[in-house]
Image (cartoon, rainbow, N blue to C red; front, side, top):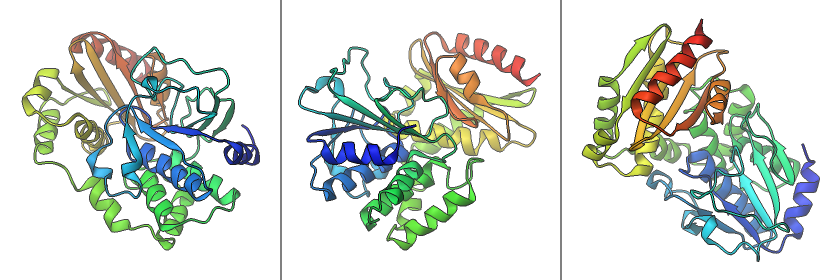
Length: 327
């Protein structure tokens, strides 16, 4: 892991910085990226912040949100940039929806993350797998860099920590993360606004999504799994960005809440022959290893992967692998 001092020096001397959010940005991606944006802006920099996918409306309350341009980095001319600042990206391909992106040789990649599966792909890497969120990693860097935590930065960082811990529900939550959250509130973060927007501002169609997922749920030998097909999603007609958040909420708060269950899985057929699989677990059951075997990644208790094939095939192959691990 590279020294915080080296990373700070690189950012201070950079002339043009690009900050891309990861695809399907969540609260941690948006919050940590915007916190870095505010920090760099206060240094006199004018960083460019982009997102390949639309930013979820539930995060429109965050300061600086309008600075995020909805454009895939693959469509940008990267030659003018000297630093590519990636935060909350588990791998180098996660910030674009295309496979055609070529990073210029002179573009220095700074990798700030917390995913245990992150391969340290950057020229400079600061990856802390024990952190609850990328926002917590950024918080720690800011403390080391003696950055003044403004209310703008505090709101962004607390949103990242709060959402990536599921409102401090997930096993990764630590005493340290709770202390940092308290400090951010002292520095101006609006806890009530963050809670209301993050988990209490769903569209009227979202309960229909949850109802479908719960209706399709099945349990088997210590795990519970459910599905939502492409046809079912098309019928509900919900916005993709909100659908993603709603599915994540369901697999965490409904499926995993069943007594006696160690693992929960949700198979979402986003389009024909393309299935997104979200996996959650309790205790020491490491689902990141399973996700990695299937070409994905994540954390010990929360991971995901994409499967190119039918919904039926994805269920069969995943459950077969899961059964061998649960024995």
